[in-house]
Length: 292
Length: 278
Image 1 (cartoon, each protein chain N blue to C red):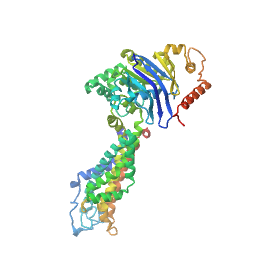
Image 2: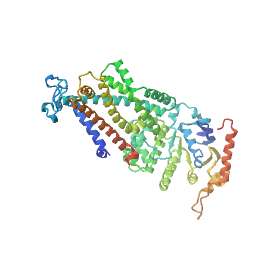
Image 3: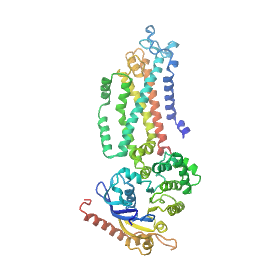
Image 4: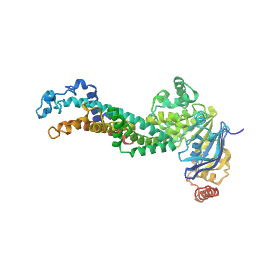
């Protein structure tokens, strides 16, 4: 059986020719939670943006395929893609503070997706929206529906965004560092919420993060990225038990642990970082149409 | 927020001026002591009150004996109509093209932006005169001329602001729930551009009043005789040595109106700019 989402040799370049993704391949099986980890600039967010079709204007997919349910969505016409987004593939963005329209009330922002994809009328969508807000454990959902984004806290806004993402019972949710912009206690609640909704709906999740602790708690499979390519892809237990790649080991070692008193923050060793950089340069140099 | 807006001196002043103009324009038949077109050649060049004039002509009369105050009051009508209609139409046209250019980018943007560049390189006065020659003099000519000249002003500003808004996360979110581009532009981006449009609109109204005055001055506006501030300046110009107020009074009206509208635009910009407001 083929996976729900299959990314195959995905290459993304900037207009000038510089590569952001260098042949990324990964798969998300239906109903599974896959973690995509890597340091800043590894290309994690670019992968999610390529799948969702929201790459920045100067970046383009120049190779590879993104198959959803066996169909290559990079070749899908605009209309077909719009049917998929919000309905089958949903997105939980990184920063809840900016991801809601600041001049619109929460109500229409939640009901938009219901009316668009499920064809609900205003009344039905409102009823459903209230239920969705209850599902994400927002207190006083009636008030939230009438509120403007600036009247809600970051955690509340992220709950609203999660409600929107799960509104149409999508088969895949892409969560791009959904807890990074929140403070620690709220992070924990949001993660618990995502896990709860995932367990209830059987939605597959591609969870992008740089927090290995989160991955350990949430994900069944882990993909490690660096420099726009995949270094290691393994089941979570195997990856944390016997990391195969040197970089993964360095990443794991870099996480300070509270059960080791006096533990220091150990950065990725400079020589390893330099070697990885050199590898990337060699890869780019090998290709005939690399940046001059 | 609303109370705060009214406390802003510039905004309050601007709104006051607009209210004054509106009252003058709407209630002109009751406010004006005389028919603005009624000539009384025996009573021409009557002095205003402060020069010892007669109370029945508080601001004096012009070369044909028409009552200045009445003409000033009636003059608010063409000024307001032109300011409102022209600014609205120029705003609609410029905003539509600016949104399209900013949101769709690429070839659409290139086409619209080049058009704006070429358009702005035409001398605007020449454009007005050519238009007047084609359409004939009249209020509609003034309105069309202002639209034709000034839609580019809206277009450029709206395009720039749309680019800014487009890069915001909430637009990406809207894309990821499958909204159509038309819907995103109309329901997501436009409301966020609206405060800027309001500011531009008030500033444009001020500009339109000046352009109307210029075109009246050169006789391209409504038929001569009908009271417009620009026309009154033009007529008063001939007698500036004997009766300077004939020219000064309509000028004062224009200055007050434009000052009020600019102040309003300026105040709104400061108030509605979320960075400055904090």
